[in-house]
Image 1 (tube, helix red, strand yellow):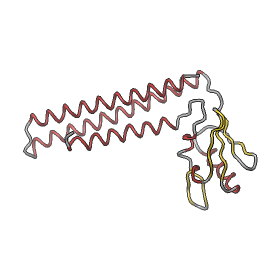
Image 2: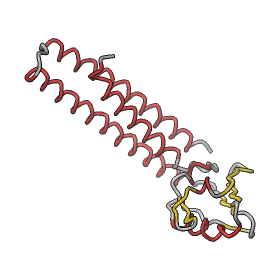
Image 3: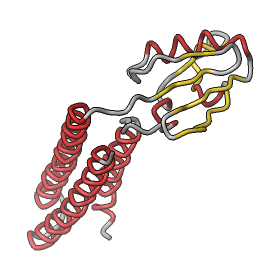
Image 4: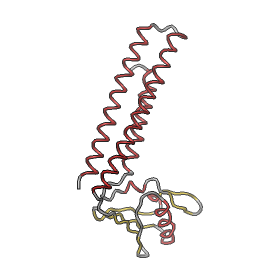
Length: 184
């Protein structure tokens, strides 16, 4: 691949990675410890990821259990979960915190699928913007550097193929997540 295209390929890959990260945090009725990835706990004045202050397990399909390494952190972890957008109220028995994921209703599943599709569309727009930026840069090359119009056209065609490839990957990711959510 041309080194001029590498930068745009990297940006498109980052867009795809970002979308994957967003999808991981969407809960699909099953307990997924990744819904806690973005939550930070106040640990001696420092915002610290929950994974760094306790052991997270999934003993049942709809239950996440957090066992803090220091019992004094239970209240802080509960406070952080309540303040987050996870939408689940934690319960504790003094030693561990439990997050019970309710069964999703059909209506809620459809809302989540809409959200998944919206995020996919945003990612596609980002990829298309990267393509536009690339095409603009290639057009400038023909004016400022010694690059022929044929080379510019070739670069634009390659960038279009790259764009199509990443749009296809985004569609596949969206389809997979949507079917995961709709599976009861």
